[in-house]
Length: 268
Image (cartoon, rainbow, N blue to C red; front, side):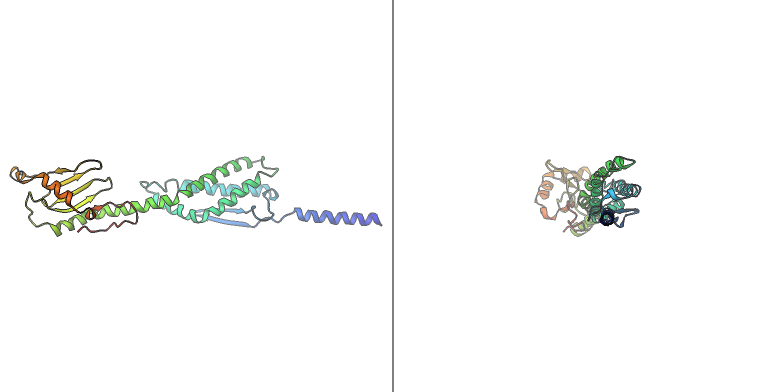
């Protein structure tokens, strides 16, 4: 009788231990980024472990996330290249990833760490999945870290492009405002000054003369084109250089150096 009870107790205890060992698998989660999709499980929470997963399913899940990260890196490689035709589209993807990708990176990194404790970690595709996954997570985090700088650079370029496109119109408006219909050669009247993206400053005069100053250089006088010998005698370069020097610095139409700078300012 005692023997029977003992066997029943052992069987019940074994069943309880088996029930504890059979941990429920985490639910399948879905993630999308641009046109890429990946299904995965979060083995980093609760008592779940990738070691309890069906190896084939785990391999597929890790491979799916690795593939998505690889496509993300390929699809944002030129997000910071302001001269690349696809830069705008890639920057949009990078911005989306900066908002949604970090949680997946945390889960994937945790799953890979958990895989390192599994008996089957050195079998099949798992060694390469682990190596490649770790590499991709690091590269993805590095790419995401540059999002803010890429966005700022892109915004600045858009502002500067708008400034350049409007420069000719602003100059024309200033000429019509400050110059007479037939300006006299030799009258050093500045109507507009501009500093371009290279730091070169030009002061433009109603008679077609210019004063130009390059960075780390002294201003120089530039004679108007096609001036006659008679008119040339009327031109006194020092007067133009002095007029440029006295022109209010705050009224120079400067290329924006930040995206917040005004790109449509009209010179006085």
